[in-house]
Length: 206
Image (cartoon, rainbow, N blue to C red; front, side, top):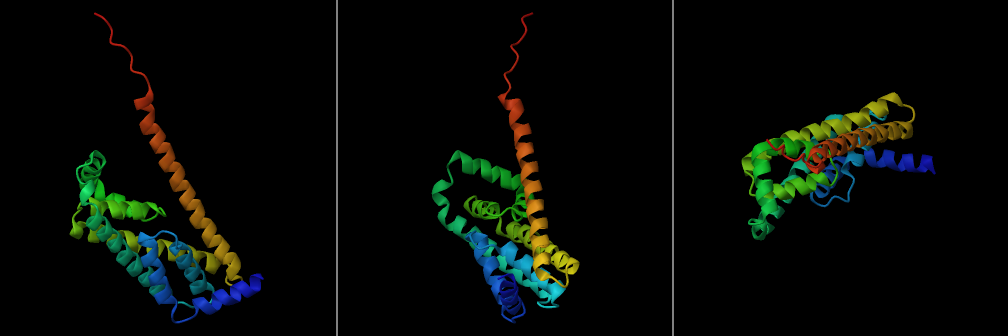
């Protein structure tokens, strides 16, 4: 069964249509996060190292281009449908947050499946500057594409004679990094929440 799956993957990954497929998957995943774009890019990176096809540079270019297009679609969806939310307190807070550190939020969220969709939608809702969005999102998708493809490439290079083990290694690295990021985020949230939950000491009487 494993050999049959790897043969099928090899045929898919060495097809000249793989770049179009990666682009399409990256577009859809950006605003409809049920398609695992990271998995597709990591797998392509594995075969780029172990089978010399597809070309790593073209995989990165296709993934980054697709992600950029998809993020802009998500932004426009939020911009078109967000007018009725403009007066809500949460949206006013989000607007202030994006004005202060919107670039950082866009870059970090790109590495969080599902989180990037929420952030790009919100940037549209709060009318975040399109020029600033395009600039920071460009940085985000390029770094994300390089990161995902290189994880796969490292796995493929480590197991050139066994792409399946290379794929498992690449996916394992990606899952480990994601888990570490989520743990750090959880700890930081707890630290921020703890002082607010602690009861304040009563003021001393003179």
